[in-house]
Length: 454
Image 1: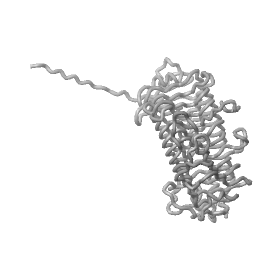
Image 2: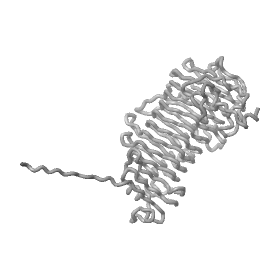
Image 3: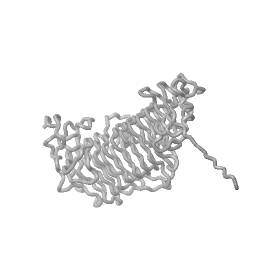
Image 4: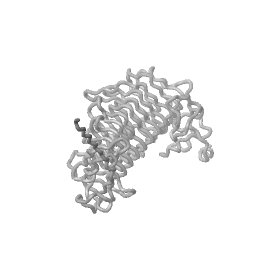
């Protein structure tokens, strides 16, 4: 009889660990709270298992080279780089080589949270690579400023395997794209954004004073840009370039008239769609939904640019937005034969200061205009509809930079004059519109303020 040997192999999975970093630590330590590492790179090297955390104590951490994050987390077990509780952690890239990013994410299921990241000689946080390897990354609650290019950026160079499933939320991005400050560079990087990407969510960020576009997506699909505050960037505040199936909603976009960020002596436009030329890539903008945004004092509030590749407004919804007081036309559409199945409905356009209220060029038979409110100028005949309203919308306090001031007074002519659409179920504040459709970004809600503003 042959002997049968059965070998049982028992594997144990070590629990996730917290590794601490402090300016008083040593890289020869264990990385515990009482014996922290000295450098963030040592902490990242130690965090090899899904669920591991690199927790950095307060202080300034100058870097001489890029912090590469190469160890992967897993579903519901991210590897996280973050600050300790409410302590201020500053990662400084002043001494890194030229044209190198400060933090580079080279893997998946990574979270970077609650850090101050400054003086990058390229990108503050760079997420670069194929989506098969670079995906499910979260950049949350960081203060990123004074970067030569983007504050944070995700991208790749292959539309067949785009970087994907990225969340950038609750960040403050300021004074980035400094390479373009003296207009000696033609770089048009975003303060925050992505290119050749899929499923990128840009949510609740504040983006300002960047010498390039504020928030942007290009050659991207299924993005979300929502609940952001965007102001005083260069050329365009929110830009969709060769981007499809993307929602742009509940953003507050304005200028403080800081002319350091003017292009051609004008502030940035609010929201723009275009299709620039990218050699070897085609992804004409289409099926984008732009709703419940408040646009104040920009150059154009909403515009389509037909330059370079053109392509038109294709299957685009621009609905229930409030546009106020642009220095140029509130609505600007370049001539293009490619417009298809686009609707511009239920918006409020209030112009001040004598600028034109619209500039509409070329054929618009494939664009439906209806149930919009116009005040402060005569709109182009192509946009007029029998269901339009021509009257002051009676905001609570139009002209401020406070989104709530663009709520409607109780006697506003914008009340109950819209048409119900499946794309707009709620308003700027998240209130359900139900069966009543008011024009603009806000549904009327009776408050002490607007009841006294009659």
